[in-house]
Length: 362
Image (cartoon, rainbow, N blue to C red; front, side, top):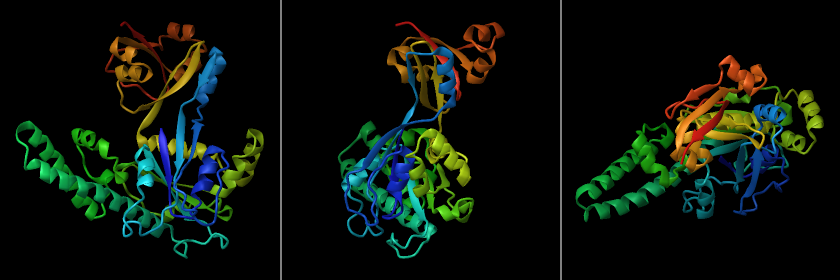
């Protein structure tokens, strides 16, 4: 899973990146204009993997991971000056979801690019830039399609006309400030649009970056953001970036003292999984215990393919047990005696926390 961290300059974007990754990327009170992103991959915390590793004592333990891409800060008005930088778009196009850091802290030493603190305004500013970017892509593609349709006949023309009509519909919605993720799309239409990597189609998590003085307050209730595949969380970026540099025991003490229930990384990853519709199924044995991210509603045969194409091609059945059932039994042998290990076919929809052993023949 790749998540792109975006936001206006001086929103504390890179500080949030450090909080989520435990990194020490350089931050500055003014945007440097540097387009090269900060990159980091972190393990997805999962107590189930810890418990299974204690049970199986495998040679290898593999957590799922998430990559964060922290790109340069935006400035309102990019659309008027020719649009978002191509390098910025190239990096953001690769991600599965956007994490939009919004400034909600006061700090006179870090000037706000718009002079005053107004999270709702800043959210709208960045959303507008995303909308202009998608409109520019659609306009260029429609120009090309219009020219191509004049020369085409038959099935090829029919497919291009379908693409044209979808884009015209999306264009009309964007011009009314409706992001693409809020516009109804059939499954075949979504598949057709994947190659475009529209920014307003990507799931978006708004992160209110609050100051230490606001800890204990819920500022998310002051923001209305009623879009599909969207959500709002808050975190004290500077505080949690400092905590992320500590050892686990010291960090736990500081979190408790500050009344923070769990580290920012865990909160943000959980919300990101929810927005993307992701779950995790597990595999366990003496060689390896591993978590596998998976789209919710994925059948067993496709889940097998996420491990290796041979498992999908030669799929026979899946041996499945829920994590809770295995923990209750204590061993796989005891779970089989209790009848909590099931044999499932190709169409079984894998559930979060399922421990799967795929039987196959190629």
